[in-house]
Image 1: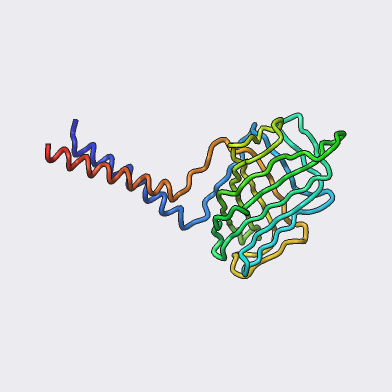
Image 2 (image 1 turned 90 degrees about the horizontal axis):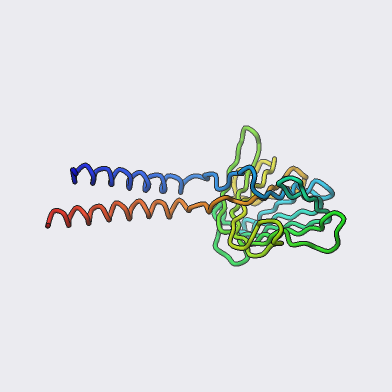
Length: 224
């Protein structure tokens, strides 16, 4: 086997991983993608209360809340009424999630025809991304939530991750000045993620590690 060719191939793979990781650090890449067939809780909050989103740049506090009508899919869907939805997170003015034990999500509701409040899921926010589409005047907030408690019948079991996508047709553009959406333009969707989403920084470090391992291997071969 050609050792030089093998080493060059290793460098190519490592460099590609590192460059991809560092490139995605500078952009709001998509964190969550809906996968058909997985459990899904739509909580658009259209009846009776819309989703409200707030951000205070001074305190770096992001919050979202809603109430009303949710449904749980896949089919046949289960419908919930008198629900409550809340998201609380610390996000800096650059749009980056600040590590904080208070980065929490909670979704509760009553099954139609049933009694009592049901914990659809609660969890801790581990990742966040924000994009703004000026042409469509739409802000998109994406969260990855590590589930800590849930009703076992729903499939959002502890140890799994939930993806959240919030859309708001309000022209914010950035986190620099703070914002509020109380006009009823925002919607939110929650769905189980098939796999955990790797952090771009981790992938970058992985690429550097592979590159370093290749250099050590080459030095060992040269001295053998």
